[in-house]
Amino acid sequence: MRPSVNEAVGRLGTEGAFAVLARARALEAAGREVIHLEIGEPDFETPAHVAEAGIAAIRAGETHYCQTAGLPVLREAAAVSLSASRRVAVDPGHVLVANGAKPFLFFTILATCGPGDEVIYPDPGFPIYESAVRFSGATPVPLPLREERGFSFDPEELERLLSTRTRLVILNAPQNPTGGVIPQADLERAAVAIERTPAWILTDEVYSRITYDVEAPSIASLPGLLGRTILLDGFSKTFAMTGWRLGYAAVPAELVDPLTRLIVNSTSCVPPFAQLAGVAALEGPQDAVVEMVAELRRRRDYLVPALNEIPGLRCVEPGGAFYAFPNVSALPLGTDELADRLLDEAGVAVLAGSAFGSHGTDHLRISYAASLENLERAVERIRGFVAGLTA
Ligand SMILES: Cc1ncc(COP(=O)(O)O)c(C=O)c1O
Image (cartoon, rainbow, N blue to C red; front, side, top):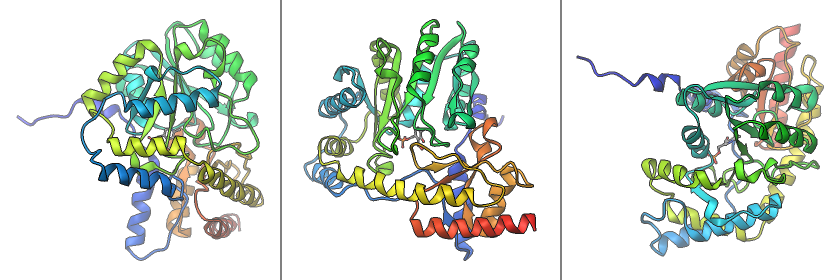
């Protein structure tokens, strides 16, 4: 008899960015030149003092197993940081540390949801939300983000989707893939509606420090909401630490033990030297973050008007993160073919909006975590390609 694969694995989705990166790398291996605007990671180095703290920790022998929930010193530093930035009292005992923010998405869903439950999540949104919900056996319920609302949701639509079956509501701001933020008034309406249901809230705030002029308020800051909220943040984006695999969350008391069990059953713990680098990131000088955000703003301020000048493209100005999400529905081909042909024919790697859900199909996601020079070259190539389509 042939051994078989668990059918649940077939319900897992994937991340389009990694697939497009692989295709782009194959083209490069064949001698083509590609401008990379597909991947969601800062093109900056981890700040030197943070990297040095990690190296010093390795030299000091911090290379063994450690506490599953995270080193107390990092849980404490994360609690201080979350308390100050979200203006709520976060108990260090409720802070958990994992290998990036991503495991918290998967583990929160596994710990709270199963068949018969519904999970509301943003669409377009980070593809792992829907993937993990399907894996858990729960029913994914997409909450459309509206371009005309700066890619926030319509609170009335959220109210209609909520029910006693809703076990979890996932919010994300600043948002991937749109760069949208959720206005305070909409969060307040959402909170009132969610409190009438038995739903937990997972607020994915990994881009919290990357905003331009606007505030990205947190639902966890609203009175009484922290008790049902998984407040998720991380190091990947803020400190350009994607490869260190380090993230943290403040979680409700009832979820501390279940989530710790999921961590001990999967990864045991996060390498202690990475955690000590995280302490240096949170407690040390923040100049590198300020400089990175200023540079990202320069790029956004170039890219968005430049995209809007290309006939057939319409791009809302993103308030945060480092993605532009232009509407391309006026062009004579769909987003999948457009993204494929931009890569194959123009050498520009971007993502089709469809990779983020059915409400993304009119869009492309363009990461501006790339040099201004490369953004200018990419815009020229996109302009030329679009001109060829409509000529
Ligand atoms: C919205 C969102 N959440 C979570 C993550 C995962 O981040 P980490 O590297 O901390 O696992 C990403 C990464 O792209 C993201 O865009």
